[in-house]
Length: 349
Image 1 (cartoon, rainbow, N blue to C red):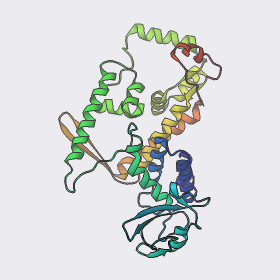
Image 2: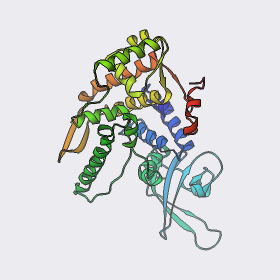
Image 3: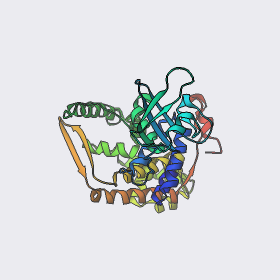
């Protein structure tokens, strides 16, 4: 999906949407693929770059309603007929009869036994749009433990259920934040429990009027740090996501390179930095708003495109600088706790 986003940014929407759709279809059971497909489509919120299907044809999904209350839906695509999977070729009897029809048009299929069936075309969508609506309608059901996309049903004019949910989530997040603030668990570990990235969690901690704890700052600690630097000078250093982000913010990569000789960033951290850039880029497309519950009251923040632009530029700059000045390697995950020392000694790391 990252490549699809790059295609879209390069003003190649036809290639971008086709590639993203193929990725989604090959990973239908992957919540990350579904979320990134949704994110890509939100980069074109008005659907101006997406192909549209106004009549039944190739690459179109269509829904039929029968005269006796029956309902069927199919996607017309190349390949063999798989009606049980909702896929049919242009030569399938229903698809062939519906070809070229618009919403509201009717056609009749002759029955081999009994009465003929009259069908009305009730709905038509391009396959890209249908895939998007499928993700939006079914994500929470298919991936109940995944985070990042939620649906909430409300009666018209009554937004209180949304506020109640915001309060519940905010209070739950605050309790989880105490794992870092009070129990001093690693920031990345707590961030993953919250469904956030380390950088976003750091911003959340600051929004709670707390500081990030990095060191005590006394003389013995400084002496130990100098000794550590002396022993590992020119031996290389590994940066996690938040460290890379912070170093980029301080524009201090050159300093670290002079001290350690080389810098290594795990591939997972590079992907996380890309994800941060993509999230910011998504928010730059127009106005946005956040609502949270803090200290007994709801807090709403609104952002215009002009408000977000400096953050986008900063995010992109940090991500590019991290990728350009550090080497990244895939790291094998230890298969069990007993072998973690042996795994960490592997040359591939």
